[in-house]
Image (cartoon, rainbow, N blue to C red; front, side, top):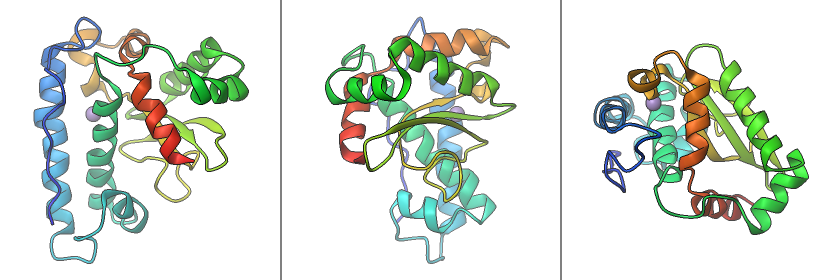
Length: 201
Ligand code: MN
């Protein structure tokens, strides 16, 4: 069964002024669409065809077209999901406790996440991952890799991800990746991150 590009669960302009509508539209309707099409082409007629995307990440990641396009498909789905205009604008409950346990406080978490996102050379992603014991960890990965791929990144389940490819910010922020990273923190839906955290443990 082929993977499908779901529509964004909000309007392209819903994250203005932090992430502009034109960037969102091109990012979703061109970049994410291309990953989806190319993933389907890469798995058609293979034993990966009837797997979930999570299974494709662990079983197909050694094949470059599957790794690049499957990662692109999965990563962007996660990204759209945790970027919403509604929801909690700060973590609470057990997620907040886990962030404090791992990083000290929310500002320290933001500092470490920003460092991971800023220092990723070239294209890639920064991640907050939850391990099965509930511990949180930050890492970054290159290209469209992600921590579900064996021995890539920090392992565990990604519960928050930031796309730092230039296509994610160049139209509005040009070369100012740090400004884009800062804006990202204003549009995280922490309810969604908390749900992913609860499911990951
Ligand atoms: Mn992207």
